[in-house]
Image (cartoon, rainbow, N blue to C red; front, side, top):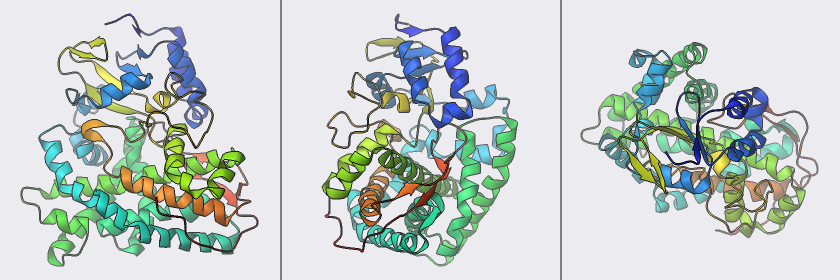
Length: 417
């Protein structure tokens, strides 16, 4: 390996220990700065390469030569028979961690739902949902922003796309949070909590799939049921993954983004007065506090040269995209929120084969929601401590108390982007 890929040391152990603490997970960015000071890529105690450099991270996540080998981490955590655990089977047989040609087949089966034309066509529906949620906030005056807005907006949208009836959607908030905990940790406690959630999610989609085969509708589960060669288990893991990704990360984007905007009133005022900033603002909010902080389970199948660095065969790689998004070599004053940035695109949706399918939809929801909220509630404010999600891979809030303050009457809609 080249000299800038260092082995573990005392400083690294201290940073990783703090990063695993509740305070470190809530605000990892000072720790990322310390980690970057050790080098653009360092080896942790398990021999996994931790990448904080933006350009190296971008090259790695887009390099098709790397493969997903989740069984390495699962076996190391003591789950040699991981397929017998419902939460691990549902997550780690999904396309999130599959390699071509299986990944290609599964992704292609769902990709048509997220085409640019389909997403653009959802704009009126998203605008209506945002308007309705704002009207409810206007009446209540105070609320938990997660429960009142950041969860119902994306779960309504992805629920409609998948064909989940409206009365069933709320049940998935806690179920998905528990299930996706396995992305942050593979301890017996986490998996024990995730297993019953995964069983309920899997059972629901198995029953929904059977219903859609009898009574097809204009939704993704119906469409998947008609794809030749797709097994029932593949349809269920795909639907479950799209549900989780469809609202969990977007909820994080909306909550993290609102906190960032309210903490920078000048930038919030700019977006309120200039809604045409919504596209650039969403990219900056994704960069500033990404709802996904790291991408793991990538392995070099043979010795590979990437961005001028040689990685040995079998090298496991974790790209800390939350750290890469604040690389000062790419983003001047990286810890400053600046909505009019014209720097590189953030890595928050990954890249390459595993680039997030729902990225255009998440962007659309944020581009509509933030200007509308700021315009409707000029005095919107956080009224108490936020409660952070456990873990680091998925970074967000589970409680955010807010007050709307003085509301303004609705006026003309935000211009189309």
